[in-house]
Length: 354
Image 1 (tube, rainbow, N blue to C red):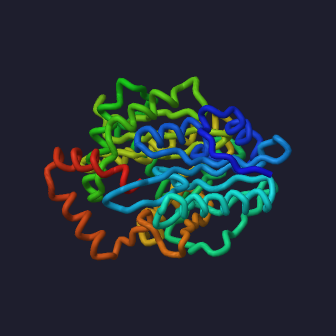
Image 2 (tube, rainbow, N blue to C red):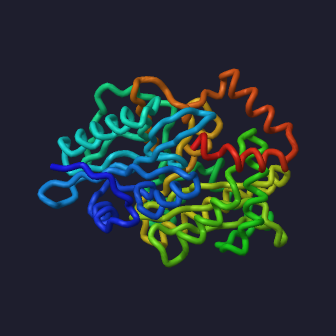
């Protein structure tokens, strides 16, 4: 039994193991890990567990060395969920032991893991000695039964009628490409500014569309909702192993009367069904955001707990309470500063808060 440090994009065993594991997500893939490492300038510390020469577990892992947020190791920045995958409990525990040893050797202040280790038989392994945060939940739409069955699972008044309303008002939705990135990014900036959150850089989205194109696995697709040929909302989705992930969103808040998000999301769900996917993943949601939780619940979703784990046992920078004084000061400042400043600051600090 051996635990090795590998670069997933240079070791063919990594993606081959994911293809065989029922709990693998898009955030475990070598393409995503490499993009995260290169955009965030993070050293890869990814771990592969092998037994008798055969891969029996993997754990994405990077080092975040930051003057702003400290030294830590993380599974995985910019990822809603990412955890150890293993054949059995022995392999899962060996991966966690090595990750903790890695933290100690690097002098990192803590180790963050986004989700419990998942075994091949579907069970989770609760990590001993870690603090468990329940700040996030996830919402997924089961896609079995075809388009009409899925649509009927939505709230009739809050969702189905609103999808129809958007179409009646002239909102159209199309799949875009790299040439539409600037239009999407402008919408993304507007939404981040409204929430007082620093934007991630344009280069991140350039790399997502370049490296996860139509012929790639995993695959990324940009969708735009338009009115009179003007983009008013956008969504970037990932697709991997039967799951579509709603990942990045942008919207013009001055056109909320056209309810563009509803036909936009519905189009991405329709395409997921047509592609034969089994789940549509709305992404993580903070439990102290009741409005967003209610919005996602209305889409016929199943709520899934999304625990984060920390060693030593304390919450890290990824868990931010919306009622905290620091959060309120931070978001208020970003709402009020000129847009050009927020773009520059976001470009400089995004890697520190991944």
